[in-house]
Length: 173
Image (cartoon, rainbow, N blue to C red; front, side, top):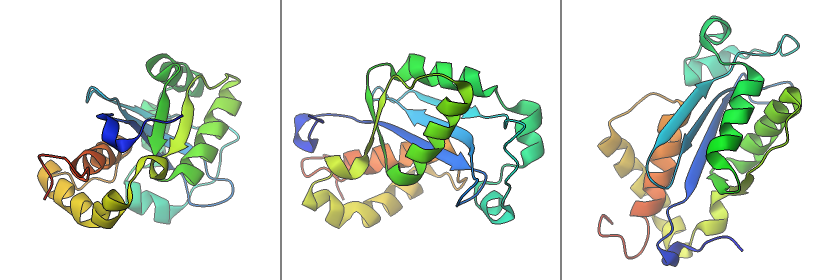
């Protein structure tokens, strides 16, 4: 059973940036923020067979394919690293449907089993949090002061929004 909001649980949060928004898209960056606040971010060098590239997606995340090819980590290295830091944990995503398929593509290409569970952040949210989500998220974005749409920043914003939207949060607005 997943942890519930009222149990002083800080969720591990993951975010995936991708080459596009639809069929043929693949993961290009994965960001994770752990319950202890430590964050990890990995650019992914695309597999040779991964050719789909959407300029509209690039305009959102700001990552050029050339950067991935020169600075991205190997797919199997990213998959092994995610397994190591998330081993046995449940990690949450606010875009579960997309992130699930992109992570599946990453692990399938790496030919490695995923050793952590991915769940929708929605499964943790109370009605109170849902009501406050957007205004709290906007507050967190101002506090974080980051405007980059990148995986680790997005994961941090989601985790902090979750915490600040809790009914008993001292940081509640």
